[in-house]
Figure (tube, rainbow, N blue to C red):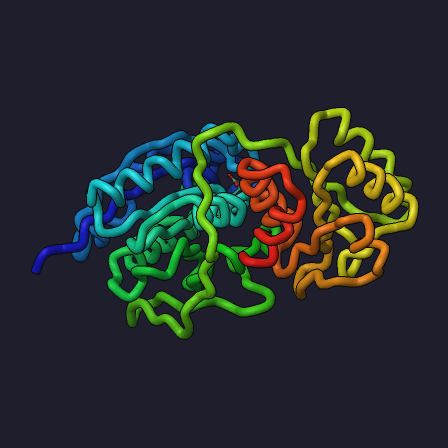
Length: 325
Ligand code: SIN
């Protein structure tokens, strides 16, 4: 039987990290080791998949750039269009994996499995989690049931939807969760098992031009809104406000945001709480034209707002995009 062809695109992260000693699990450099060396740590993959690899970049994901995101989207779309593989695996740092996964879920057009993975411990650690995660990610990408499920994230034996997943722990191996919905499925020694199908984004955006600046402002006691002016000064076309609870905004910051909104800046209310939707609240928010982030956390609301503002400067159209996600 023909083995599924899997293309592994490597971008760096802790999965490619190197420390001075096998005991060292926090003081290390991410994005150092090449993908061929990482794959050689899991030769069993070749038993069930024909694997090729490409090193797209080798960075710490905190330094992800628009240029790399756009290149990654273009390459995945090309692999799909030219039928170069049956599935794609992307290795990536865990710190911004959820943002890249969500970005790809809105910009990549394919039914083929696109699976992201990473690691919490560097490749040199004696108990490194990267090899297992890479093995699992290739299993998921090679599984016919993964088709049409959008961009997936596979970490620590769990399979998540790009729209739902978030990093919830700074250091533990079990660092990823979908707080409102749980994982889509699991992968273990028995294989790949999906427990439900994801609600895929209904929207698709081109990712071929510079994306407008959107800043996230983090709500806190005593916020006087001074940073709203700083964001505008820096050229922001949109602001995501990570508010308290259901996206609530302290009065002075609300006033500054309402002023920005009057000038045509699109303001999205998100929440610094880790789960639950942001839904209509104080009528003054609607009166000022603020948009509710719904189920999107601040970093994902920023991704969508940038893509939306790349298409339209019309706030009502942006609102519809958020409502129709
Ligand atoms: C990174 O995000 O590149 C570093 C941290 C990690 O991968 O866990």
